[in-house]
Image (tube, rainbow, N blue to C red; front, side):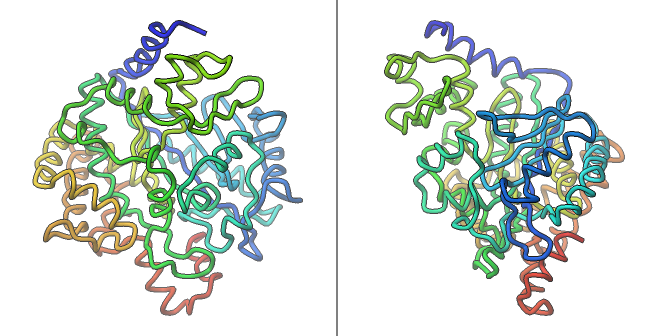
Length: 436
């Protein structure tokens, strides 16, 4: 345990340590594991379940176990990890790289290694934003202590859906300085509802049309407003810094701290109060802050990198397209200036309202008199030109998103057209489409 002043300094230094000239990009991909015959979500502990998959995959290339209280909850190999979300969503996190092509190659090789094990256990990993058949009431919660404490604490009406049913893509972005970080963080937040619309891919849940194109996004909006906020007006108005973000995290109620066993605080104090007076006999540490910051879930999270979290899981090249989109925009000052000019005509409240509208109507959503798709097309054009000029060859990764904005159809729109047409609401047709 360190003193309060030293702790505050250590927290600040974690953010500034992210400033680097080398600008890499990272990706984390969550997928829904389902049984090939019934399409039910695969649980952790069942025979031929996810625990068995982890054990067998670890032996292929010497991956190390990640454990919690003796329970295997993931695998680690050098700087790549496989971890499990609360409903056993299978998350692959790759070490950041300057090249999208290198990340694509690594991801494909890992999938090839994993495929025989999944086939042996009759499991498919769905690149889709929500469990298509099994709802949270019939989804086993992973035996990880943190997840049980979160489930007991989160109060939103769809928090269980978010935890146990949903899957997303997260893109990680580097920054060169605090000024560069805040500029990118601001833009990523403003872009978030537009790109949520592009990625909408969770309309069918529990075997039925939910009426939303991104039910996953809706679930996050109804999880916990205190820890899943939209950006502050200070950020929108360019009155922001690392310390502002730290303050926002500090003001968020705490769920628990880790000691030999987790200590459930249950929102009784925020982290600033914990720093001032401790909790019972426990005093704050840097690890406590880092845990607390990881339990803060805005669409875009600031760390010693920028973590953009607002995308439904999609396949068909979309993880690489998203990396290309953000790289083309956020790793080029001219591209950022062009985007800033486009979004300058929108108010904070228009962007905030858009966040609540796009889960239902995606690219067809209006902001003022303009559709989200029209504006998204401008963003994609800027990213393409930037990539072509500065990262020649990587612009081809944008092709899936180019097709989406040219047709004005998100992945959910394509699914719904078929679901209510030739598929005749047959879940097997949806699974076949997702996995091909």
